[in-house]
Amino acid sequence: MTAMVEPQQRDSVDGRWAGVFGAHRGELVRAARSRLGAGGADAEDVVHDVVVRVLRGGRPAEDVEAPAAYLRRAVGN
Image 1: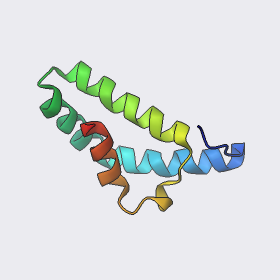
Image 2: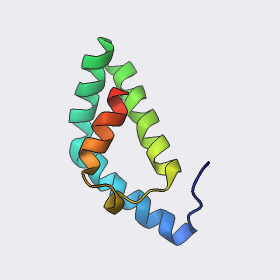
Image 3: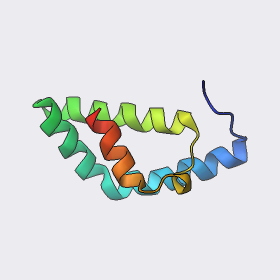
Image 4: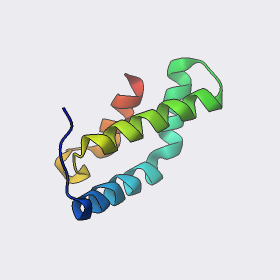
């Protein structure tokens, strides 16, 4: 089930997650690469899929106690 978010709220949610992602992108790709034991393209794909799932979920970054750790955990799963 996907949470419904108004368009104005969606921009705000996306922007905040974008800041977290931008600050931790390299760390997330390294985590994915170490989990996969694969090349950079596969790790980038994993991180991209995680970010898309998080944004589709509609949960604001402020509602997550530690957004960077939340993303790292999602990449690891």
